[in-house]
Length: 211
Image (cartoon, rainbow, N blue to C red; front, top):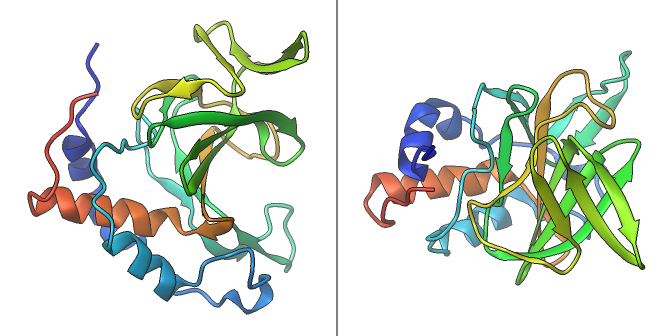
């Protein structure tokens, strides 16, 4: 079944995208780990986002933006959230944002089952997936047999390729995709990127692309 085009998908969530550019205070985050908001905006507005895909097939809203938030462990503790959480039904498919190659597949207590894809200067990370990580003859694979997916580190993927399914692995209180973006080793607000992708398509700067 054909998925929505990027433009249609963005049209469904345009109000959220236009309000997703939060003003944050990065003073408690190491300067070399995060690109400041002004630089993020300058970076993404200078790029033509042709050939990119919204990372989720079934969009149900945003549960946590990039920036400071209350700790998921409760109490008065604050934590800096280095990504964008997108709510979606458990088992729904996740798509690669850009063309690239699988840099790493891994499992850890926070991100759970995860895949990182490298696209030139960009690394995009997808957390809390279904399936598992397997090693065969020294090679690592993300394997989701129920979803019919298997990806090996070093494998090439195209934008819009189904690379995983929304799960509950790692530190999560509900099914969602944690989507993180890094540019030249620094974390970037994914909301700024999505906002510019939407604006360019709304203005006709990018063609429609059916996935």
